[in-house]
Image (cartoon, rainbow, N blue to C red; front, side, top):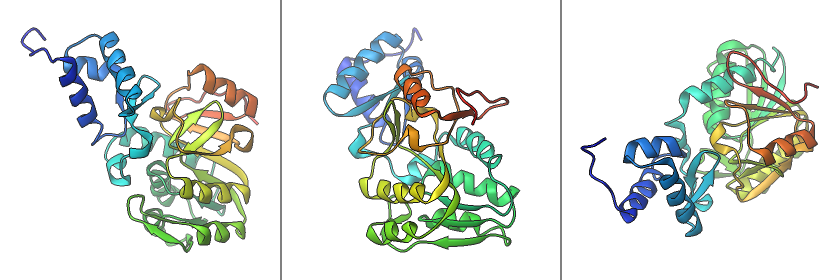
Length: 268
């Protein structure tokens, strides 16, 4: 650390914003170690960058500004261990023969991969070609992809056709991702894709949200479900944010931490 060249505030800010071009989330502790300054200095940097609209602050770190969320492929390239832990936990709540709706996201794609490896005789409706391809590896599955406008950045379809499609589908469980988890509920960075998620949840007996810890204390463009509309949150770290905990308790949401053991406020 003593041989590290000290960066000016302007240089630190440039380093942080450049790093967020290739990463969906960065941690304060990681940045402090990488740049060679205190965590207090990094927190001040992040607060200033957020005030300028260049980043979004998250629990313990930062993410790209909400109107500049990284692409599907960028998000898929990191946090793979966390995604797999969450996906394995999600499989525990799916039974052979279930009918599912699965919304497009990086985390739900990993759920699809694990479902294909572990389950049989599922019927799945999805808005994601990537998820359909992963599920198609299992010959016992029946996989349906809805119609709609194609969104290249998210590898899915969206729009009125997609919403109308899911308005006529019944599923035992809807498994959905999120860009943000806050006291109000779950949100997505794309309003139109969020409308598809909402339609899936309306027509499911149970709604399961799968999201990693970088989404804690984030508010994206569209809050598509409140906590009282959600049955379970599966996450890779306990949601210690005080406001998020309040929201989860109000909604009576079961919370599963994807690790060697589970932790919850309420089990329904």
